[in-house]
Length: 395
Image 1 (cartoon, rainbow, N blue to C red):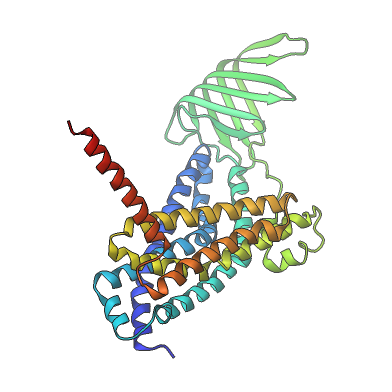
Image 2: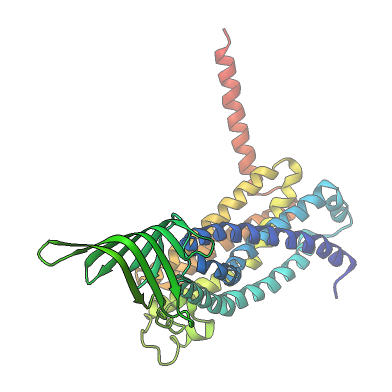
């Protein structure tokens, strides 16, 4: 059963973790939201799909934010315990660092289970839904309304623009139309124009007045026609082909489907190397969460000695190297250049050994670990160089 100390530590950890997780998740989603607006800005009718796209991105960024938020929350809590001398009182009462670690390690195991569910089931379905929504947004039919001075892709190879448009978006002034048919280009200009959709919105009648029409002809010649009125009744909004079924990519498969070699009856089989690399990459990221308390607690305790910034920088570098090495190993494994177990689990073992080493070194001397000693050595070397330079610079 959790003791009073365990409950106190958890009350310190959980609000900090929730705040860090929300901050990291919102920051990542906002960055992606701007990119989505850039992609869909040309198609105003596709903008309502942005909310669904962002919603399906949450599981992807949750997998990235969980370890980062958990580590920062641990570091902040342990640093706060040291700053307020609670850690000194805890150790003076005969408690050990290992006992302090226990509730944090239990939380890490719970988060590892949650991460396994996110990586193994939630992300594959969300990733497929994201791609399906994006496909639908980019291939959605035109709403037969035009904005002045903008180019609208109206389907059937048509691109329209007009210098002036009334409030309805369908009465046009100084119209320019480009269409590509069988590799040949057609250009049409008109002094005025009108867009009139059918009742079901499937077809659009385009009427132009007082303009010219140009068309490329075989042999390199050009057909030019001047007209007083011209009408075109074209299906500008044809239905896009249905999006493919889930499972066309290994990242859309759950843990069980990866282990089974893909979805039953899959028409485009995925290589065994890709399946194995994806499976091991997800498992390695899931099992990295229980290692974070072994790194965050020693570095958090060293913050009281004035090494807080240096400890955070070292931790950020270590976690970034670990993440990138996992990505590299997974890519090499999926390409078949290395064995998946060597490419993915070797970086995990190195990171695990480093975390255990740093943690074990701090058990006997809390606040002192290889990172603080390395930082102190660098500071002493820099101070010695600066002192020698000052002595030599004196006349």
